[in-house]
Image 1: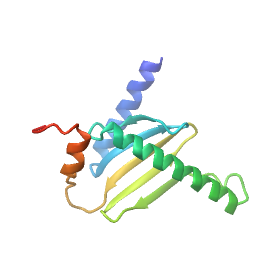
Image 2: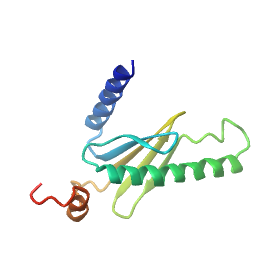
Image 3: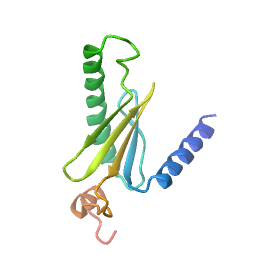
Length: 128
């Protein structure tokens, strides 16, 4: 049963990537803050960093929202959007057990991966 669910999730994520070509990467985080799936062009180390930082940020957002709003339906966090100086947008969508973090290119130009970061994340292999 778990294998069928995994292939269904993979199919949905691949469809998501084809429907939205401006997406640079994504990370699916479980309730414990551990990345369970991530984009194939994203190194595992970067997925772990996104998972750690965004799960902590989401927890603080939920806590602040509960403190500001009184009703249980009003204080439930649905999503968070962050715009960076580089022209990317980080979108976090929370569900019961999982959080989807999507990194999107908002510059309108083709996204160029930082070669220094990609070389360091790839183990420093030349010509790869």
